[in-house]
Image 1 (cartoon, each protein chain N blue to C red):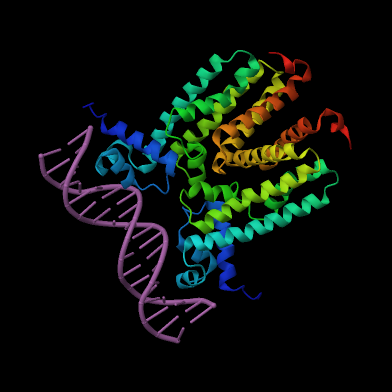
Image 2: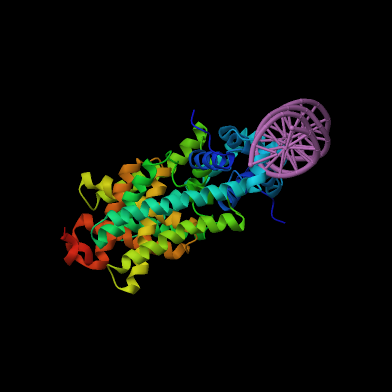
Length: 198
Length: 198
DNA sequence: GTCTATACAAAGATAGAC
DNA sequence: GTCTATCTTTGTATAGAC
């Protein structure tokens, strides 16, 4: 038999999975414990409380998302493709995990009107990563002043894709649609001239 | 003193307000009762359970949103402006109410992984209203085949605006940005020729 | 580090009276 | 239709042992 990972890992796995598929508020600690095959005391010894566990699980997930997205950027050819790699990354990220109901970070944010500082920071880190990486990639395409705006537009469209999944849309359909709209936004900044390059 | 509205109304008001600002799962029934100045028994007599109350409150809110949006469509001049009136409607709707954290319907959907039939129907009714009205308005602008696609794109962008509010963006900024992107989507369907009419 | 058993608090819902 | 009082269940967290 494969040796079981330590209780801490099992807790993080269970918490991440359940948060993504069922939501946090509606998932009692008992269910997480049951899934992880861990006793209550162990959870509180490691993470202090439920929110601490969730926070830690989200941090780990954000790191994975960061990696997946960066890989997709690196594989993309042109600066425009690198900017739009966000959408391929979303596809790939979802395929590599138990499919979440929409987006764990937005989901937890929606469920948690008054998060503690650590959780709030972790949730903000998702938006920050989007902002910074997209601004960086946009700088290769448009003037500095426009880069911030273009990044914001793409975050909006990306967030729209996630929201469509919550509305019940097919993931691949919504992603493809988002990518198409994002391409429009890019081209409205770069000018129509270069829009038909390979 | 102004005569107090009946308990049923006070419950709906309180539930709507609290659902919009704090979320449903994290708002205990007691808090709704306290805000409405109503006893528990009255709530259960009228609505059966908490979800019944929330469902009814959402139905009422959807009807108001429907009205506000239709007004904005009627006030708009060109077919393109009518299609984009969705974004002015969002502004107006929010200004007419206690500002919700983002969107009550998406919020409740996010918080409720397994809604009962009635609640599920009410949540779906929001997306359905968007779909049908936008498809109707799009038909005035583009061919029938494209109308469905354009409507979907605008729902995606609109949903993105709402998601940006959850991410902490300024409401008016996000709305204006969404409207601009939606205009791009419209013009990519109608062709660049007519894009500069008054 | 991890377990068993349990304390403590909160939340949803109902009984019975007026 | 509405109230007071209360029951039941569920959920978070801890005590103390190994």
